[in-house]
Amino acid sequence: MDSYNIAVIPGDGTGPEVAREGIKVLDALAERFGFKLQYAEFDFGGDRYLKTGEVLPDSAVSELKGFDAIYLGAIGHPEVKPGILEKGILLRLRFELDQYINLRPVKLYPGVDCPLKGKGPEHIDFVVVRENTEGLYAGAGGFLKKGTPDEVAVQESVNTRKGVERCVRYAFEYCKQRNRDNKLTLCGKTNVLTYAFDLWERTFNEVAKEYPGIRADYAHVDAIAMWFVKNPEWFDVIVTDNMFGDIITDLGAMIQGGMGIAAGGNINPEGVSMFEPIGGSAPRYTGKNVINPLAAICAGGMMLEHLGQREAADVLERAVMEVTGKHIRDLGAGRMGMSTSEAGDLVADYAQKL
Image (tube, rainbow, N blue to C red):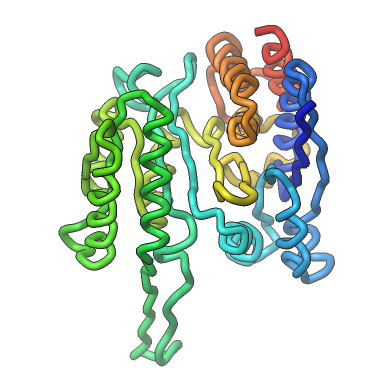
């Protein structure tokens, strides 16, 4: 029997509630398909920080390297200054675990309301591959004469050939394995950001020669923002840098129905990867049993696929589609027509029956 050790970080706010429902579905699938999931829970988050002053212990990264995957609920606490937990936990784990790919499927499920007129599930089904450890998020830069009228703030976008190439190669390989439209689009801004995206474009074109079966395409980020809204069916897989990826994936989440259905993975293909719902901790809904758990459940599906349990991952997605198509029309907190736990029960039930 295949067995996997999963580190669970429930986190803050409604994070523990949605993580619990995700684990409920994962356990149902493990029982059905004959594999084992063993969980170890870590209390990293706002409550721990407020009690101890410690964001992430020094031993955390080395300990987490011993797991097959990390399953995250949400990070963000109303009593902690924004940035402390996000940088100290999320960004630190991404950087120190070298999770250099942020993988974001954008897929409209049946029954989910889409804000785009005339667009349905057949039009919205693409994936964004975002570089996850470089760019403007590398933390390079600083202040000069801070707090004076002459203050200067510099934030540098760091792009290395190694970082760009491994991201681009991952995207080409992912597009090949996805085998949908076999089209990979580089999202950049070559007409203005002439240094960083010269490197991206040259690398992209060089690697493209090794994948003759993939149509290599390019579009400026502002054009992509427009086309996401007007013609989302044009896209299959998109690869881009850290900042542009951060922006267009949130736009993608909205056209797929909102944060309640959006899941993502922080991937290290050679190490430990972390999977999470895209939405925040939603502290005002904590403990009310009204938050939508589908994004966390879908993140669990991404984790199963990453672990090699593709059949189970496929059944999980079909179970979610049954629930959105037949039971849940509004994905908003408190507007699902059922509780958080009831939604999790429903997906788990379909996951065992389909």
